[in-house]
Image 1: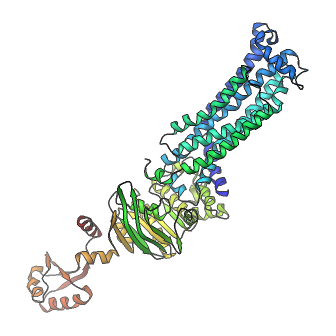
Image 2: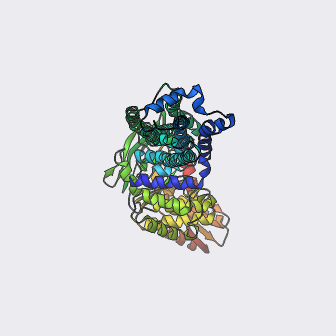
Length: 267
Length: 302
């Protein structure tokens, strides 16, 4: 693993010299963060009507009355808590958009810069190379997710009704943020790195990698329409599937990584 | 010791390298010569364990290079690729430290300090690689190739595009490495460089066209010649030489170029005959065809 760490340190140093790569992710994260505040805080103030008085949010109120930790909340706080929790999925996904461009360029970028061949001439194994490339994109994304969650939580504490923030600290919310989100990001980035080692253009890798994000987007839609209520057993099952998927993607990446084609056919 | 045995590499129907065999000793500089597409880079990549031969094998000491042994054996090989391949957004020092760690060297910072000192890069350690001149980039790439003190060095066009001073520095370095008993393989188009550096030359065009020392190739193809400068018009002495059985004599103003079987034994007798015939000898030199002539002759014939 020392070689993975060595290459990972290079990836981090490279990113520090080119922080602009994460600007789209930061912008997307900021916008995703503003949206729920506009819906839950700004619109009711401008409309002069409380969300809890609207029939549109009856599902939210029902769900929250069922939850022991949130039962004591004021109805307005309960609706706000529901909205902030639904948007959490979207928020968790945004950092991966920035990391995707890093992962997509990871192999094909090295090839185009003519830096891959010297790298392959070292004792570095394919697993070590791919692990460093995936982690080089994943760890900054994870840091961004954590920072985004912290700012989001702080915003809810300060701007929302008292107690609404508790929804973000419920086990399913934390599991989505720090377990499912990262596992989906990891899978998406692994796929992007896999594709990056097979295509001659980083954009192809970016587009294919983005496909993995679709299931979480579907989850967001199912949740917000009330068709699905995320429970811990569901989170556990999804996490298990994602762990298997990630292991499978790493094995697939190793088997697809063809040093010879990369060196002899790519121009 | 580095040995290639019947090394062959096909890409689809195309045979890039065909049945190449050689054994190199420690402290030997071996040059691969050939036109573009002759298989030089493919040969180097097979020797570096980057691509597998279609058939044949590479041995490093007693170890055979296979996909299983390649990661370990790559630690004993230094491969300078055709392009320096530096990470432009990293400093010179950062570039080298990453490679020192990839090779698992203890105290990578100290090793890099030494390399910067050895290659005259001490003041450039904090410079971004993108800011370096082509010559400096090549020097950093060489430093990177040698960080782990490999026993075998594979250099793909090490002086291509360098100014004469930088190219001379690289040649000096290669000679120094030879004196440290490293086995060195150089792929190049620069015949002058081969002539100055190489102990043996392999002329390739997919398959091996010729393999020998530069001097032996000269002699094998063009025979030995002696060039004798005289004060008088040179044609005066052609008959004298003809009577001595020397039929291949070329006259060049005040010099005679004479083909001989063995220049060491024949030259004193020729000089004696010319002096007896009244020639005032000005100079006597062993004449050699340029390697360029040998190379073009070999490839023309192949």
